[in-house]
Image 1 (cartoon, helix red, strand yellow):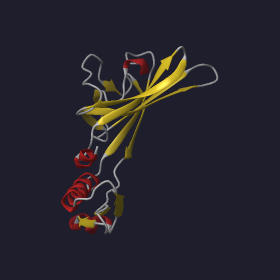
Image 2 (cartoon, helix red, strand yellow; image 1 turned 90 degrees about the horizontal axis):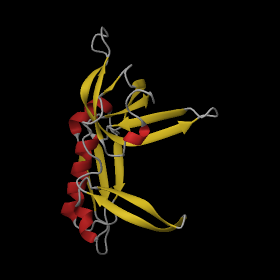
Image 3 (cartoon, helix red, strand yellow; image 1 turned 60 degrees about the vertical axis):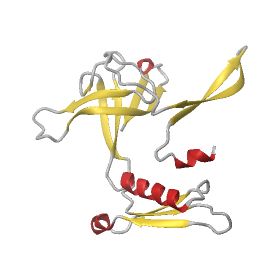
Length: 189
């Protein structure tokens, strides 16, 4: 297990309940490498007005420009700090402290901190879509990790919303109101 501390961005995993005679009997730990899900070319692209009822973008990175990683050595605590100086000019100092007590090798700790600042130093967005339930894609068609094609463009908007790409599903939420109507919200990155 200690070798897993060298995995930089990790792998997907699930804890799946196992039922016997209608009762929870155990939990399975399942790993998926490099990720869970698949490219869903069998489904239509998500498009505003076609199968997307509502659309929201939100920032999903912290834009940290200073990362301090704290590990655990044999005896003394090890730590390292990495910075992205050009990013500090635009956003002042934004610092994150990582507690990585499973790492005892200084070079691995530095590598983790450098990887984190690479990912956190770039603005990324999550795309939250509310789907129409009667227009080609339902929540039962989707799984976490699936990659869907997106065609999010609004004609004559001056390229305000012009995104044609793919996004990986990181969250699926289904709400049922008091009348029994379902609302499916899919979040992708």
